[in-house]
Length: 369
Image (cartoon, rainbow, N blue to C red):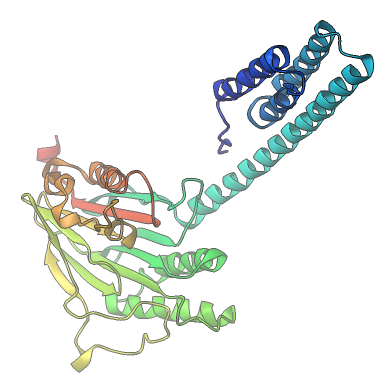
């Protein structure tokens, strides 16, 4: 299960010890109207939010002891001294209570994150590293570091028609987006085995997502759509067929060049209830691209292309040195290098969920041996 990230102990002590020290100095050196009691009382509160329960209780006891000792040295009246100790003691007890509540909240949050991570793995499992003639790798980076699940999706499956793949982005929000991801992946798993063409597969996915929108009574289903690229690599992997439904185009990386594969016949996204709208003259809406030996096919979501640097410039994979020099990389290395490059471009800040899927033809046995 995912652990809750806590403030390092040294940071807590770095805040607590100066509060105690300055509180003592103010009590000893400052004029009579100015006392260090507030800082002595603040030390347990700081400890309650940053240190362990035992350390917090220790700081509270020390603060009470220091307050009593200072009053004794300064010969303050017993009544005033009692009030000082009571104030620091009450705040110390509150600090211990805050510490207990924060730790309980941290455990609950860790449990929730663990459940979300399990849901993520169930809804969006890692693809196989080998599928038919292809080597496969995928990566996912959520917009928020604490998030475990989002609206981006990908899947790879061997079928009677070859290896079929999908990468997509649900434009809805919240739980409904996660539900749409589950429906899209489930429909792809089922229909990829039976749809004779990618166009037919896209139509069936569109129907499944439209039915889901109707089932939940989503009156804004036209705004909650899913962009996607469907790909099919038949036979020995010499070519790839692509159908783009309103999604950023994939990239072909080969011989030091990065080429974006824009759709020649753009289509509307999935889930808008317009799957019956056929391309003109009965033509298919897909493209066929050669996948030569050594080439890498990169499929992404808009978390990559819409990533911006501090000047507001968008990340362009076609001009990325990491991708241009990716000729010797395997798909896994390419995915990791791209995610790292986008992170550097944005200054380590993520502006949107980002999914990456990369494939390459397997090397012949005599070469890999």
